[in-house]
Image (cartoon, rainbow over all chains, first blue to last red; front, side, top):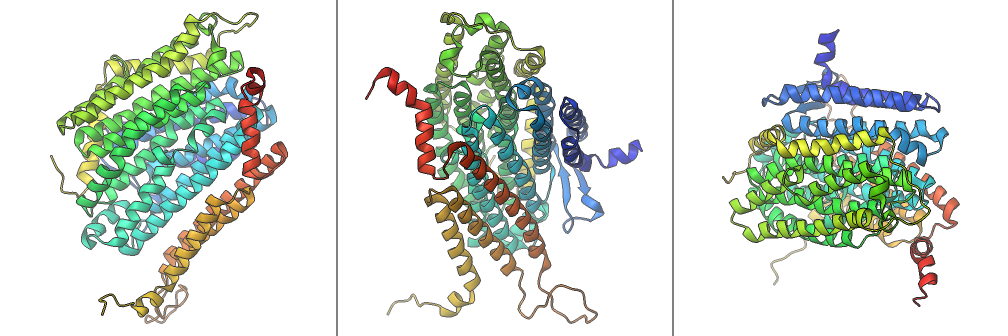
Length: 502
Length: 138
């Protein structure tokens, strides 16, 4: 039996939350659905840790779904990059669910909570599926499983604020357009190659050589995934969705969904499309690089003028996605490493910050920065967590944010693009401004009279502080994350057939 | 004389792609341009359906029959894979439409309208309505 489980771990990673989701809906109100979902998330986390350990040394696990051999059957292909993303996703779920108990109880009526946890598990299934699969069409199916459940989760914020409904609707429209663009792209490359297995696609695209259809397929996939990951001009769905969703959802989705989309982009850019180095490099340099730089500044500037804490953090997310895309646009080993390591670092940082926002909402009833005056004295632990997370967002030394920025700047300097390096540092200054606004309100301004705000419950503080602790731990000794990121970058470079520039 | 000659065979021979492009652009335009939330969903459906047509028409083999295994080894079959993929995509499309319609129902219940302009006006009032009266900035 243990051998059987071990052999089927890749399938269990996805099937476990998928099967658990409908069971969750049948458990009725009370804490049972929550406890069950949390248990499943912990099991999923355990599975992805064991997959990460198995692939950390550079091994590749190939799992044939249903015993059908690739390229005809669907293959789950796990290397260190997938395993790293799987660990981020399931780890965040395992931390957010304990946090969600109190937070969700305050934001969603009791009889609807089982359905909330069902949608949460479905979202987890979709995100894990996207990260684990080696089949291009399968990516679309899982992407839609995760997106559809995210729309429902965002809409469930409507008990707190009815604007969650329109936020979810707009997210649905833009997300579906993005997913459909992605399918069109896959259709184009299927027309040329006649296969959907990613490894098989890569070799057949090389044999086929460059063609206009392939270029169109590339562009459709690029734009489609760009919509999903909130690439700068395609980010319009994100601020409202993050602001009005229940806080537990925002913490989970902000830490995982866009990261998984960045992973899809990396996979398609490097593993699948190796057909034309020039075309890709030109696209990255002329489209992605400017877009990433604009995102870093425009989104940070907008963040400075937000009054709502959640909305401010949402705009900061768009800026942080800019950093990830920037590392990709460098097209070097160090740049890729910076992107991959920032996937983890930003997940930890933003997860912690959104959890803190949720604590404020629970105690003070609002996430408006102007009404958080003097809250540092009422809720010292929560506010301290915000300060630590904020330092990581800025990129101060001894936090994970510093590690990401360090590698990004290094990658820019390796190429001799020192203006880009300067821009990275300049954009960090903007982060100081928007983090400082909150710190100033929380510590330096007097509390409004007649308001009592109690410290958040431990079930919410502990997950937030675990994430803060991780963001400091991996900021001090970053060996594990940077080694994993470096090996993942090696995998991407090794799998891509491009004429690689050293 | 111009070197560019209209290649009529090429244009007509790819009529399935023209259909796809026209439907896709119509759908996308309706989705983006309409202010009525239901009409947006209609546009989105049109957009998705065009992609189904692209996939299904690319699986067609000239002279091919439906891919049901016959004893005759000379039978030519159409490619069944794109059809199967689209079965999945149709399911995804239905789920999306159902969810979108459910959201519109809830929006209609809470806002009392399905017109985007009216909703934006209401949301603007929620954001700034009270402040404008307090500060008297108008």
